[in-house]
Figure: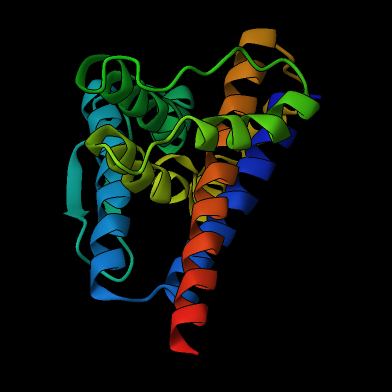
Length: 205
């Protein structure tokens, strides 16, 4: 297991989550939820642009394709890599801060060290959500946007293909554990989306 493979899985799951939003949950209210995730995603890019000296040319959130367009970073090679992968860190940091300081550790997520735990964690997260209280709904709304919030787009990966090749040779345990956590969060996202899609189909009947 290496960082490169984990990022590919994260990107595929994020793409699938966005596909579900665009094709099965394309409503005004769900679009607002999507743009919340897109705001965190693009803001992570923008913040890293500022930190690496890359002047921002365009910053768009409420668009068919939210994006940040920027000039080259002042940090050679590494700068573009940090900008492209910024949502991985920015998204999970945002969720951590909301859970810890706004929701007062509403969710308890154990450390993930293997694939079995990665697949079990989404159900563990969902089992902690109480739909009768407001923190539970905040978790649901944030989880609904996780794919758009955290996952790097294929364009992001294309921009750093040379860095991405190096990631296939990196096996730092703490980065792998964070990557597995991100995968678990996006799977939680997809489970919530499927639940909503099925509920809508039942009501339509």
